[in-house]
Length: 583
Ligand code: GLU
View 1 (spheres, rainbow, N blue to C red):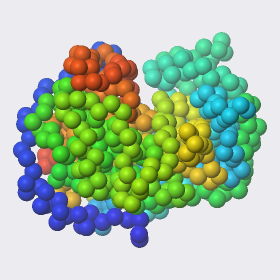
View 2 (cartoon, rainbow, N blue to C red; view 1 turned 30 degrees about the vertical axis):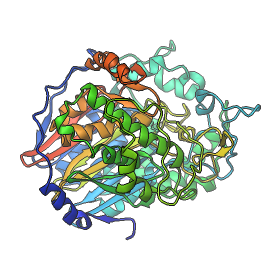
View 3 (spheres, protein in one colour; view 1 turned 120 degrees about the vertical axis):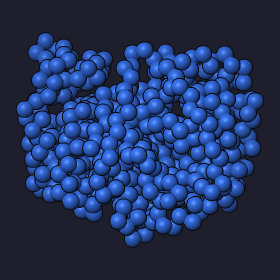
View 4 (spheres, helix red, strand yellow; view 1 turned 90 degrees about the vertical axis):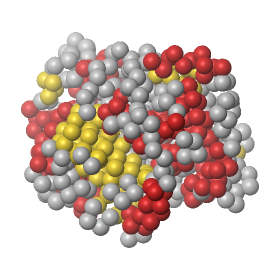
């Protein structure tokens, strides 16, 4: 099939690169994280492993792997549990992207379960009557930003190809938890407590607040029988029970009847939704092959560009977390974001020049603007291939505090990296049959035209909004999975993922050390350093190089599996509640 990439196609080139790869220096001791985070220890296993954002979900995935289930089976079980216990982040009311490697065939696949805009959406849906863009929450809360959810269709498509256990069985752990209840976690409690929009809809408020209107306290047993019933219907009837039956009807009613912000969703939009098989975006980084999600996500492209730009520097000679490392990374990330902000959108609407943007000659040329001694300021987009003039206006976008990432490897060696989302924390705040609907359409540019030029990522009927999600698979020179990685974090996902890859590949950290590193980023504006971390000490030396610095919390949710000759190593982000489990 055209959308599948074979690992065998890359083997010769990778082996040649491995032969001349530089030896790395010894890693530095892991620098300090902000004090509110508890350190987590690396988890080791020999046969199989799952790392997800919540212990209940990791346990559900592990039990599937123990029964001989595939990576896809485990992902479905874990994802459904996440819908119950981490409802603010992802679920059947949202979408996501899934990267899969099948060990028997050497095939790498990219599943696109991104939400789509309804056929009747208006291009000015996110504009005020005076033509100015709406505020984020003004647009996000209610029905207008709800895209047709893609998660269930995507998981069904992946299960048809790679599932081993019956679809219906994979829903049992989630149905049990939703029915019997689970203890409200610290994170869920604090996100409910600080949310200012969750009381907009009485049904939603009834699930998350007590009789006095207070956020359910930590440890409260939270039951969600309506969600259990929805999951039962999907377990029995598959994706069509979601898109075509009573669930689909109720979604349409909730979206179009929302006050504020009624939407324009129809049952025809629901019925015509398809998850798409995309061609994975793969490129070499030193002697590894890095494969990520192509557009409509910008995640894979930007990650590969950052790595491709940094390939010109011997990072093994630079200390991780040093002024030099932050400077080079920030400059490379700026260049990648300048391109991302112009070129990436739904490729079924606007051709995205991915080949030109990843061409080694193009990247070599772009790399020339990185001066190791001085910040370039704001980066301009490049002109890859035959493009002579930047065709679109930039669109920064990328805001969000929800989303979740799962990494899995099963006993056969099949590898899975999946990031899923309902966009903002608690999405649109609309609750239907026990699950929250997404506000993913706010990932479109609110303005269709900027400074007289059209924006590629503009709102259009049936279009998928640009994402930053970056589920990634890294292969070694023999074509075997070496690293499975991904994170939530809006457009910061790109920096989190790229930096973790550098931590493991160049700085020889283990998966846990790499995800525990304090973060730095530059999305072509300010250089951000993780607030409260040891990186704060770099503010002055970076300013001396010309960086404008912002100290800010950077709550990634990196969940990583590293495959080593001695076995599997799992790393769970200390900034969230997740754990790695394996055997
Ligand atoms: N909606 C975002 C995206 O698709 C993800 C949001 C988040 O990570 O919080 O890029």
